[in-house]
Image 1 (tube, one colour):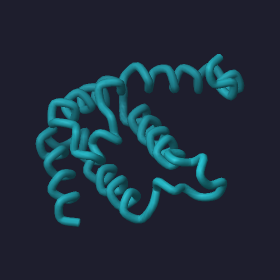
Image 2: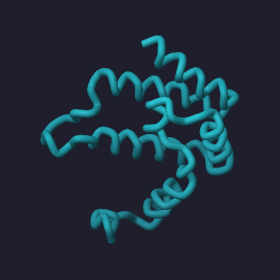
Image 3: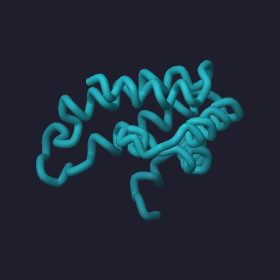
Length: 120
């Protein structure tokens, strides 16, 4: 195994990780944060959430937050260099907009984030 700690996962947890990797490959939260996504990626996300459910989407989001907290992690052993006030504000804004992924049109979710980010 490339990541030895995965051997400790239960079968249902391993399936959840695998499913998350399979179904969210067309949407990247870090790309959204940088304004590199388009409404079509949000539409793909909406379709995945519709077919696979919001629990899988929530799992994906928490995994992405964890990965981003570890960026530049080799420089310090406590806290997160990357997740400073500005980056965490952008992340919370994106997650707030993504809460509408099941109820709002893809353009509204995407441009809502872009607008909110531009106003900060």
